[in-house]
Length: 345
Image 1 (cartoon, rainbow, N blue to C red):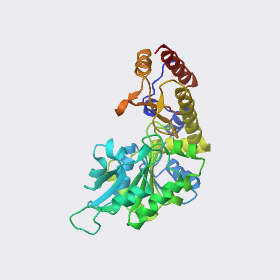
Image 2 (spheres, one colour):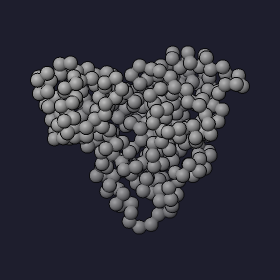
Image 3 (cartoon, rainbow, N blue to C red):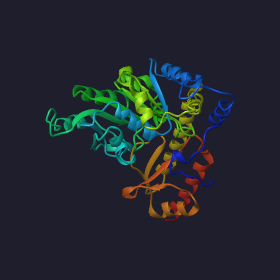
Image 4 (cartoon, rainbow, N blue to C red):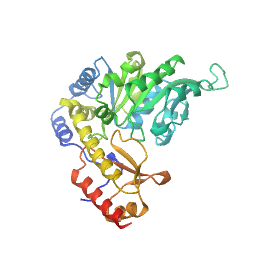
């Protein structure tokens, strides 16, 4: 079975999500989020995170990240993030635009992760209080990271402690938050507000929705003017119930985690098979639903020739991503062909 492993963005939508949209299309509802489904999403997320949260559905992850940061950072501020983070590499300057020019300060870190020590060292050089320099205002963490690794709650807490000591708020880019939670086996609360996170960009699109994300504030004071920011940023959807219907169904009865567990399990199966191949190497720990692997050239070329799709990353890495609907047969066929190619090398 030929399969596209380039991204979980190539996947369709879970049947439960499609059914929820069909149900939401029947009848009438108040516009702009003043509807029962949007209220249900807030209730569900307050229960999941074990605290009252303010929730703002938006259509894209870029909007969630950029608008979240705009609530945390003045135009003369700085956002500290990993050098490979989505906000730094893949959002076409949207965070800078919506913060009216705040600067992203990109830091290195092994396997896609920042460390408290590295952040502290960078902040010691920030020239705090010097009018000629941007001032530290926010920390942005990616969970799961762009390398497919996961921050433990203790790691998040250590980073937040450093950030708070310098007067900074903390944002979490959770495009694959469900995969991280499914892997950690820790509660969503422990990984976010209990560790000090102020706002989360909760991604559902990669996890089985059509187009739905949510900005989740754990600090209500930060959300006071966010409704205006969302409107000005063109993400106050008039028929908001169709975004909320996706989120509501995704969160209901733990569906979001069941879908993430399947994606993670397919990644584990793929990683185990690749690890057994001669000359194959996994670049990072496999902790969510992404694999970065080095394969012998003939194996990588042969898999592409067979019809499989994946991204070739810098440094000769192959990125393989599984999704909520990745068939086990596709994983097994990929591994079988890779094994046959490896034996012919």
